[in-house]
Length: 423
Image (cartoon, rainbow, N blue to C red; front, side, top):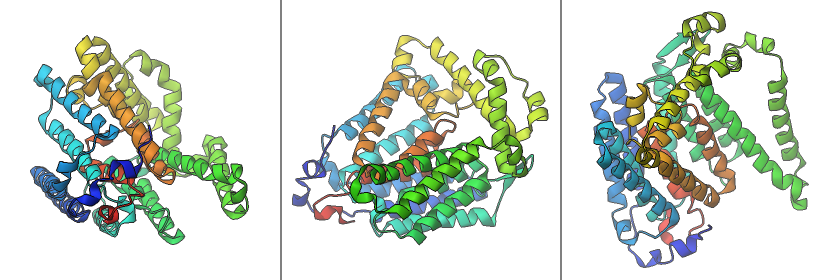
């Protein structure tokens, strides 16, 4: 279903101006600074204060938009997801972790407010620099205190974050701040170079594979008009560049594993994939794997992939044991960590356990709506996160979810005709 920006916001010109991106950007900066202090000092309670300040900033900025909420498919889906989470909690509150439910509510409300404000996409405004500099500052702080974990020949750096996965995820959000229209080649190369640097330093296999998958998607999207439209065939330099990138990726997939052993990070990826290939039948059958033996054979850092698959198998057991109501609406926000002892390390499985078939369907419907509306040149950003969510718990990271929400809510409004979209 296609919704034109004009029909969505045709009455907005009659309303008084709102504060635009000023307060949301200020709230994000405050939360980022407080989050760094909280992790450095070991005071997680400060995170609640930072999150509260960011939410209040967005609420203050979007207060005028509350009077002009639109009957929009994406808003309706988000509100349905919110109601569904409350219904599951009312049915059985023992499985709900209430601080997770609070984060869930905050993210849903922030999306509705930012979307209803009719703001220009975050990457096309002057306030993009505020988000960009904040993320770069967080990366610089992580470089100055490179706390890490030694695994085989690879050091996984986490900086001031709880773990290396959060560092890789947070720095990947720089993708949301690239303006494909206005940013020059130097700026784009710089942002991607920073992302690649931190993905390598964090040593997060899932993030690296997700980024590569997103780049392949971006290359295919870029290649399509060059191949099928006569007017674009003259741009041979760009066409050759894309073909070379795709060829290098294919070549890398075909090279023998022995050549990767000289590169520690690549060796780790190859070892993980080899272990998955060998032990996959046992993992999916529910057999308890001997991780100590596997680590001695394949290396200490090679077991994370097969462990995830075995853990997902336990999640499937939880689903098969659920009653009809739990299968439909879930066990409650945060319940997957209680039922599995550890969160699933797969956001799709997590949504299925916590919000049921209805929740997963609504979530996929939401992303389908958003992907249809946003500029096709920015869809690779969502693809990167969608791939990373296969093997990680990204939707539990409020810092990431806040900027992801800002991006998704505003990226749909890239061609608003009224003054309210200026900031």
